Length: 84
Image (cartoon, rainbow, N blue to C red; front, side):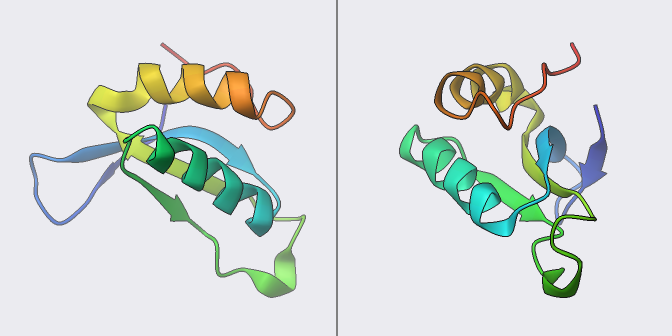
């Protein structure tokens, strides 16, 4: 699980899954937001490299388990099991 620091040192993000398609990343992000899980997309501005570089879906560490379950249910083709 990749940990990334953001604005506050108390908030840590973890990668829920990595996809190669910006549209797919947006769909996963919207699914998580609909389930009231805040998330960010890391690497979405790689238009020239679509399909070659990974796009990470990031959530707060405390939301990882729920985000993994939701992603696995709604986007099973995109999802590889989260590390626990």
